[in-house]
Image (cartoon, rainbow, N blue to C red; front, top):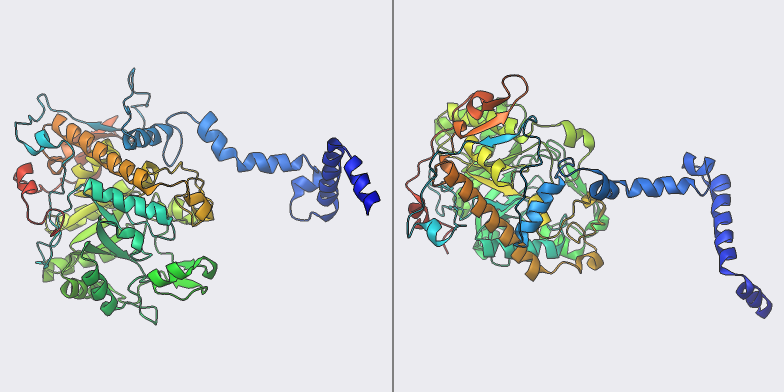
Length: 518
């Protein structure tokens, strides 16, 4: 034994390296049946796979220009990071964006901007920007709700996001006076840090799931009664990442904590089917909405990505006839979001937000329903100029997901589906989560929201309006390819937005439903 140890200790370090390389070469040539490149080019072939693995990072930091990347380019990410940290988010020497590109947004400013008088809410707080509509008023819900912020956190589940990320977001919306949509993973303790919550559920009914995998009204009632910070309920019909596709939560990912929150068994695969068990057609869905609203007293809405309109028209006709139906509709863009999906779905199924929203809004407007519904936009709208376009088209609020993630540290590594998020945001790894400080990150989410609202208010005033709800289709122009270089929104999308009743910012500030009954 001593002879062997002496022999091994006598081998120099470079010989160990050579031995290792020879071993890798033997493995590649004689035992590797899976990878042709490393078989045909032993040792050096591994360099190709390594370079491929770090390719996105190399392009992100060294190759792509400031406006080139997708889904969010460097300028967009930089604006969110700087806004969240209360740093200088200005740019000098003019825009570096190609203002002739298709889809570029132009906001038509007034010759004389809106004047903020002394003691106006914006003279006191430049970030005060509540929703101009109240959820649930038309349908006479027991607990109507006026969101205190026009920008809020979209649906992202605990499980998809880490515990510390969810905690950071919830504490952040409390500071910013916004709301936090739970995502379909159920209401977790990390959603319960003082922020307003919109409880969201999908076909898996997690958090309100019966033993047979269906919906439990008893659990819903108990959930709302024991958590008074739940202000509204959102039923997910589909999402932009993968509309019409169900999902499987592998048993290996179901910890004891996740099992308790979602109401499922530990270690057993859980199916989220494409369709709901609680209803199978539009009349049944409306009845389901009304039962939940009656039982809880809360406004109830639906979320969907938009494609075919036949069933939406059936819904609009039924709402016009009966006076019943959802209090709000969240329109998700087909551009995808935080949810992982096959490229065939993420790239091709359902319409991008501008087309989906304009089609849906025109439909409900034609039935005389646009005033009674709170329209919420969700799909890369977390920038003031894009929000101005959304409001001009008829949106009343926007929900942001990836933008909110970036404000608390997401670096767009695009590995959310691998459980290896390097920023600790979209992972269940305790080690990776250690870098997320909820106290600090919540302040950054809040500061991003406040900076967004401040700049949105300033854009609104520049256009001659007091509140973004006053934006109309002629306030915004967008570059198009098949007509003149730019076209006003009403010409591009062929409708005029319904005027939102608005009596002044002070009226919103004095509203008894602002931010829920607190």
